[in-house]
Every structure is written in structure tokens, then in C-alpha cells.
Length: 433
Image (cartoon, rainbow, N blue to C red; front, side):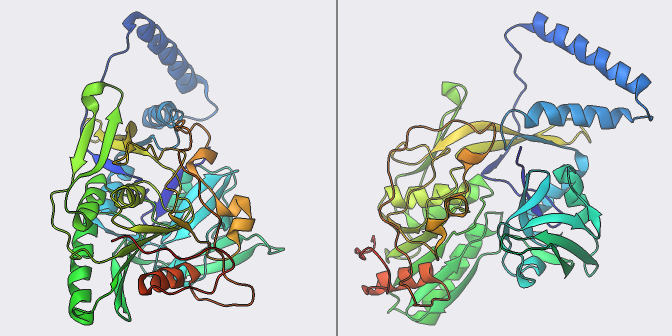
């Protein structure tokens, strides 16, 4: 089963996390539950007494809780007290490490994407790379959290990853120097008369970073600013409240997202409070298969309100909310799937994703299905989604022989200027206002 995480101090920062506390619910048949607990107690005692080596009680209990929760769906898990502390550091927006988002697949660690500006990104680690060994020690079959622990270390200390890459005949080593990683820091720059904003994730600083970026771009470009490109490619998500605030910053009102849990009373709706910080300028949002959870909330809200034109490839399709539930003093916490989220039009993103208004490939990934569309629907045990309501149109690709540093971004900039990008298919519509 695949598992997702961010490697720095090594913690999964969260696909659409809703931090909070919920009460325990009792099963419908307490008698049956007690019988099963007796069975667990019997197994616990036998392992404790007869296993080939002494085993700490905490090791057995932690493993039992992890097994119980992780079999529910790909995003529910148990965090011991150390992992819980690491997760809290990550959501604050800064940690130490190499800077890669990873999953576990076929016994190896697979790179989903390197985090912008980190040692991994600078060293050329790519999405799809598989890590076979750390400092010469094979991690085949190793638990994801254990592999992440091996990648942690003091800032400035070196680490060597043995990498398997598609198209390379042999594994090769990449030596990195661990660094303090600013997790998911919002960055921006001027692209002529257009403001470009890169948002790699959602932590406690994301919305304030967006607001600062827009203010700065307005000053740099002046009243002639044409519009904004919001880049959510390879954004794995993060804090739900930040996704709501980011959406609110572009909207003058209306629903942003709703979450629906197990019981009708669990349904919640989140509305924009008004006040578009971009003054109604055209917005283009870039997405791809690495766009997930909180970033899909933003994309879906702006798409449904026709506030932005969505460009790129269909997103990941992670449409569930995880609640962090602390477990007693020093007992760690559960990351438990407690709800699904829906766009303002009532569309469930789960196992479907956000379908772009204009399907634009970065290169030839549209011709390689496995690379083009890694998705929630590929994960064993994923929550089943609703029938697909919308299909992407023909995929626009770079014209043969024409080179672009970033074709999707070039297409977005030309769209805002009302120009045609040199491409192999499609036509440019008017961007959403």
C-alpha cells in the first residue's frame, strides 16, 4: 500500500488536514467488540512472551494501532508522539531535511516531487525517481516512517541516496547536504505585466504569503497589471483553513467548499467573506497530476465561480479530509479520514480530480498514461468517488521542434495576453474574469 509523506524532519504535512479533536464513537455491538479485544489481548500476550527476541510493549501497541488505522484508507495513519511533534513543526512551515515528497510503492520509496529550492530539487531529484538505499543501506521493504527517519539528520550533514530512474540502466548515487527547508513557502515574481505566484503547499503561512505577494506585485507592475498566474502544480495540499482563505482572497462571496462526514450533522459549509485582493483581474491557475487536496479545493472553488481559468492536466483526486486526533498525554495522535469535501457546484473530487478548462501538457506526458495520470484512484483502499462528471478536452502539447522552459506557464501567460502559444492542438479561449 502506498503512503505519502514529506521528507525533511520527514513528516507528511497533510493532504487537506483539518486540525482538531473529535470524541470517540462506540460500535453498535459492544459485546462483539469486547470479544475481539479479548482476542487481541491473547495475541498480544503470546507475542510478548514467545517472540524470538524481547519486544517492548510500546512497540507492539504502536504497531497494532498503525495497522488498524492504515488499513482503512491510504491517508489515515497513527503518529507516535515523535511523529506527531514533527507534523506540528511541518504545519508551522519550516523543518530540516532534504526536501522531497514521497510515497511507498513496491517496497521502495518513490519521489512524488522535490520541494522547490531544497537540496533534493537542486541536486536534480525528479518525480518518479525511486530511492533504493540510504547511505548504502537498502531500504527494500522498510516501513516508510523508518526510511524517513534514516533521511533525517542535522542541518549540514550529508546523506547519499541510491536512485533508480526510468531510462537509466543502472542505479546511481546522489549526495545531498541536509538544510533547513522552508516548507511550502509562497513565492512570486513579475512576468512582464503579469504576476506569477507559486504556491507549493498549504501551511500556516500560505494565505499571508499570497496576500504579501499580491501587494508586492501590484507595486512592481503598477496599475497596468494584466492578471495573475497561480501555480498549484505538484502542490500536495496541507491545511484546510488555508485553502479556504486563499480561495476567499480571489472571491467576492459564495461557497468555497463543503465537507460531508459520516453523519448529517457533520456537514459544514465554508463561504467567502468578500474582498478580492486582485481587484477582479483575470486569473489562470496551473494544475497537474501532483495537484492534490487543499490545492484542489482552491482550483475547484475558482473554477466553479468562473473566477479563474484552470490550465494543465487533471489533478490527483484526493477529496477527503483528515482530522488530527490527539491520543492522551504523550500518546501521539491519529490522522483519521473524517469527511469528503465538495466544490461549490456539489462536485466530489475524490478519485476524480479537477478537470482543467484547457488541457495543456508540459511535454509528452499525455502520451505516457502511467506518468500522465498518477491519481488517488490508483491507491489501494482509496475511497470510491462519484461517476466522472466532466472529461478533459484534447490535450494541447508543445509543437514538434519548439522548445519551452515551461510550456504550461508560457501558455498561461499568452492566454492572459490574448495570444496563441505555438502548440500542436487546441485554441486559446478568453481567460475567466
